[in-house]
Image 1 (cartoon, rainbow over the protein chains, first blue to last red):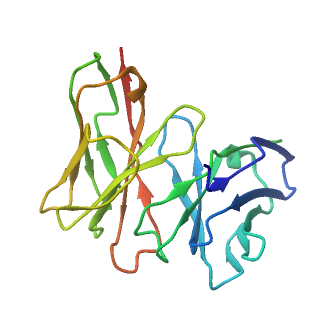
Image 2 (tube, rainbow over the protein chains, first blue to last red; image 1 turned 30 degrees about the vertical axis):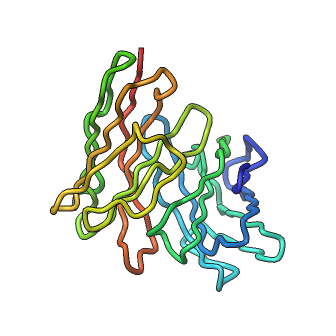
Length: 114
Length: 113
């Protein structure tokens, strides 16, 4: 039973355009969400997070949107750059922060074409 | 400021053997969590240590055990290795109280033959 789902395994976008990566969850106890980027042979790198008391959080080119009623969140990257090409993981926790068990999706491979 | 460091980076073991993986958390962090990432999957939570005690545990057998030391570093031990234990093992550090970020190390690639 996968509680965090990233249904699109891959996404390809043109450099300079917007990348939108989607994530759905089923567990209503989840109240904190994180996005990570992972390059081959490296550990996941933290990108941005959002608490369930918010519906949007921005950090530079990265914005995360949360729709609690739909149990859906998305990561927007604007503008996309070739260096953004990586696997992106959505993760969720149920204790209001990053200090408890994180449940991950399977990841989305983003390719940004020059 | 050193981030999360893990050792070794790669390891090859034989079925039935035991392995110990090590993790030093980011400076200022007091909590260490371990994850297993199989090929093509997201990381799966193994367990979490805080104040030298296991605080949460995922759906992993007792062959997986751990330890946290007074300096917050941690070890993951796996006994009676199976071929299916081959994976990338990731360590994440965070603050137990009010932590809003969890930082990962580069991982240890374990291959069981």
